[in-house]
Structures are given as C-alpha cells and as structure tokens.
Image (cartoon, rainbow, N blue to C red; front, side, top):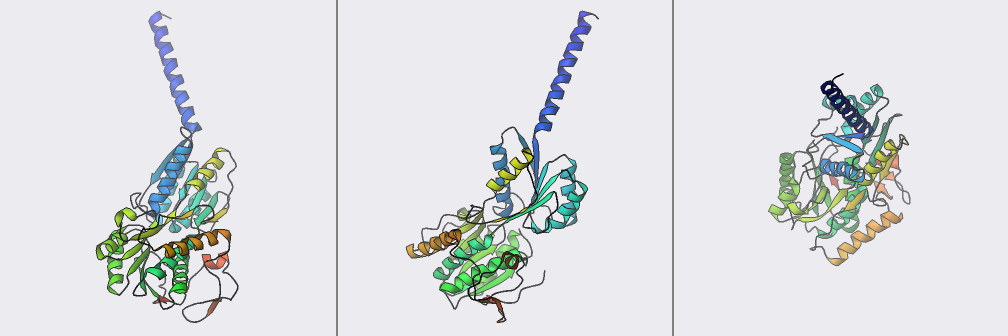
Amino acid sequence: MTSRTLKAFLLGAVAALSLSAGAALAQDKTKVAFVYVGPIGDHGWSYRHDEGRLAIEKAFPGKVETTYVESVPEGADAERVIQQLAAKGNNLIFTTSFGYMEPTLKVAARNPKVFFEHATGFKRAANVATYAARFHEGRTVIGLIAGKMTKTGVVGYIASIPIPEVVSGINAFTLALKSVRPDAQVKVIYVNSWYDPGKEAAAAKALLDQGADILTQHTDSPAPIQVAEERGVYAFGQASDMSKFGPKAHLTSIIDNWDAYYIARTKAVMDKTWKSGDVWEGFDTGMVALAPYNAVLPKDVVELAETARKDIIAGKRHSFTGPIVDKDGKERVAAGKTATNPEILSMDWYVQGVSGDLPKK
C-alpha cells in the first residue's frame, strides 16, 4: 500500500468512525413528538403545550430531540400524522386534543414499542396513557370574580365543542357565579372549533349584543379578549396569560401548565420506567394556575378568589358540592355530597342558570 493509498484509507476510516459515532449519538437521544390541534401561535391551548415541549428540551439538553406538527384536524388526518411520527422513530408521542383519542389508540396498536400520551382522553392501552387538568377548578374561581364584577348579571361564554370537559367548565363557572349573584345567567355560544379567531370574535360580539358585560371562553385564541377591550367590558383568558391582548379588559386567565408533567414522562421513558396510567391534576400541583389579577379588581374580590383557590387546594372546597340540580329541576348531586370524578368527566347536562339547551355533539 502506497503512502497516498494509506492516507486515503485512514481518512476514510476516520470519516466512517465519525459517521458511526454521530449515528450512535442520534440513537441515544430520546425522541419526543407532539401533535397539536391548533397553531403554536394560538396563544392558548397549543401554545401552552408547546411551552411544555420547550421545557423538555431545557431539562434534558443534548439528550432529547423534540418535534411537533401543528394545526392537525381531529380524525383521519390525525391518524396519518401520528403514524408518520411513530414511523420516524419517536419514542414518546403526545397527542394533545380530545378528538385524537381513537387515532392514537389505532396507531399505538400498530406500534407497541412506542409510548403514547393522550391529553383529555379516557381510553388507555399498555402503551397509551391519558392526562388532563381539572380546569373546572379555575372556572370556579373566575365564576366568583364574574359574579362580583358583572353589572347586568349576564355573562357570555364562548365555548368550543360540547364535550364533558367543556360542559363541566360551564357548570362550575355558573355555580360559582350564582353563589354570589343568584339572579345571574350565563349565555353560551358554541363555535364548534377549538381555534377559530373569526368565529370566536363573532360569538363575543353577539353575546355582548345580548346584554353580557363580561366574557369568558373555552376556545384558544385571544379574539374574545380583543373584542372585550374594544367594547370596554371585562373578560377572562384561556390556557395562557392573555393580558397583553386586552390590558384593561383582562381580569385573569386560567393557565394550563404542562411543563412538569412533560418533563416527568420524558424522564420515565429515558429511565425505562414509563407505565400507562391516568393523571388529572389541578391547582394542587400547579397544572392549573391563574394569571395575575388585574389591578382593577377590588381587594375583597381578590380575597374571595384567593380564598376559593386555597380552599380547593386544601380540599375544603369542591366545584361540584350539592345540592345541585340541572336546568330541568332534576337533582344531580345531593346535599352534602360532591360529584365523583366519573360524573364530572361524563357531564352532559347544564345546571340552572345556563341559558339555552346543550347542543348535541
């Protein structure tokens, strides 16, 4: 072998080793993927999940590789996207919308070595876990605030889709509202979408035209906050602190904080300790939080809100303590009892004080 040939051989060997080392390093990284129903710039639900993804990267620098697909419709498109992420070698896949439940289960059955986490779902498998937050706890607190701040006694509620998670939030809000303003009523408009700024804005305007002087929402864009700011009324944000979109209107927001959960579940995969299960957390763990209160709120209103929040954490208060009757007068929770978790998670009826009928999904 000539010196030139030897040099070429050595250079080739070094290059091959470098490529091999690079491939090994890539394989050592835990790959985590996310599927979002809206854009990460929605400033709401998908935005907060993506903040959790970034928290994973920060917690495990150089040890994880994350990716995401945004604005994925619920249904056949979701199954295709989830399957593609599984095929690309992701170890852990978070599917972050209720309508992804069946697609997640189908893909999981075809990919038993991949771990899946489905947000707000109720069906699990050996490699599929579920998780959600007790958003209704936050609705209780803002319902109390609304009851103290409304002048007309009419509150507008922009809702997404009539599933139990949304219905229980409406009910928790209404019960708290009426506990401090017995004559109050909640008017609900469903936009049949999690994220549609145009429809959300139109619904907000319609509710204000119907006499509402406070808006709240279970949709993901800041459009209702912006409408409230323009019309000079108060509003509550959803999923993240939306105060910058309406500094005068925004009283507080219910914040979804997934960071700690996402870090823990990623670590479980890395440690090979991941197990399927279900998590439903709230104020007590910080999975549900509140944005800073607007300075316009009177001291006694802030004290009322904070007392309720702390009592929920301490177990002294529950969003659904009886007696509770539905809008048709049927007793749903007896006096001295509290609704069970399965009852809350399957809620398909309105409490008294909610105007209109619950639409069919």
